[in-house]
Image 1 (tube, rainbow, N blue to C red):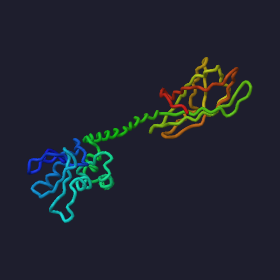
Image 2: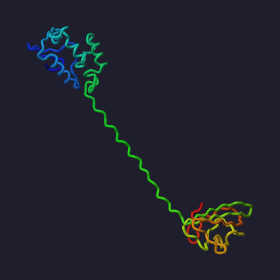
Image 3: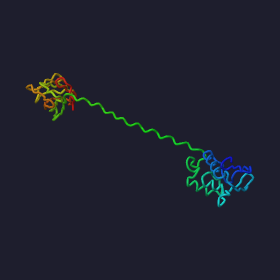
Image 4: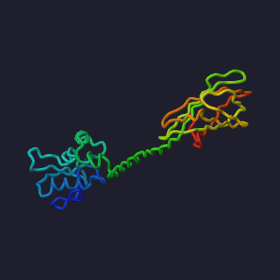
Length: 240
C-alpha cells in the first residue's frame, strides 16, 4: 500500500479508498500503519466506485466492515470534505480524541511545535540589611518650653551613652539666629558671638548611661531657629 488511503491489492490493482482524505504529514505514518494492521494479509472485498476509487470491506469480519468507516471512526484517517457517509464517524472520533484527533496532532495536518519552555523563575529578591549606625557617645534634646516676643525658655537634656561618666563636662553649640543666653539653671554658660560654652556647676558629672537636665532663658530679635550640632567634652552628639 502506498499510504493509508491508497492501496495496492494482491491482484496488482492500485486505487484510493473512496471517502478518505489524503493523509497529512502529522498523521500519515499512523494512517499507513493502521491500514497495514487492518488489511495486510487479510481477505478483502472491493468494488469500484470510479475509475480511480474503490470501496473495501473486510471479508473476515461478521458484518463485512467497511474499511473507510473503520479508519475514520478510529481516527486513523480523515473523511473527504462533506462526505455524507463518513461525517458522523469522524465527528465521534474527534469528540473522543481518537487517533489524529488526539496528541500530538490534535486534528492538525502538521505536527504542532512543542510549547515554549516556561520562563525561568524571577531571581529571589535580595534584601540588604543596612549597616547599623554606630551610636554616638552623647545625645542632646533641645526643646523650647516657652517663648515670648523677645525671648524664650529652653530645656536641654544631655545623655551619656558611654560606660564612663563625663567628669567636669562642657557642652558647646552655636546659635543660628542671633539668640543670647541670659539666665541658666544646672550649668554655667559663656557666650562669644553665636558660640556658647556651657560647663558643669560644682564639678558635677554626667554618669555612665545617665543624663542631666539643663535650662536657660535667652533673648531673640528675630527667628528662633534651634542649634543643629552639640559637642560634649569634645565628643559630637546626636541631636533629637
